[in-house]
Image (cartoon, rainbow, N blue to C red; front, side, top):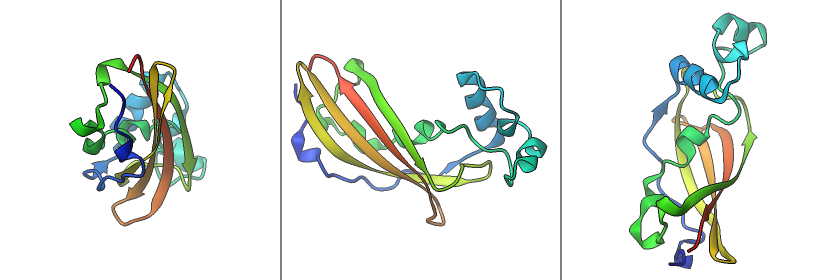
Length: 145
């Protein structure tokens, strides 16, 4: 079934606050196989000019696609048929241990490509104080829609 085009331009309320911890950063770095010490060691991060351990550049994927609005049944998205199309990040500054962030997502594009549906979701990742840290662009493809 085709994705609901009425969702194009729809923004969803901010997600629940997510506390970025050193443990989560290390686990993510381990999962992607990146041994960079700035993701694990506060002294190494400080020596590199950061206030604390920082997250790998792709870390926002952990929080950016978790918006409950994307699970709205009226969107008609069948998660069993979803594959990752593309992702891109634009940073204001690195995400660091101790940040508490929320994500506000907007569906900016839905279109058919052959038998597939393509959806682009833009997300602002901000601290709870309102500082924009990162903007994410995620392309989701639903196969055989």
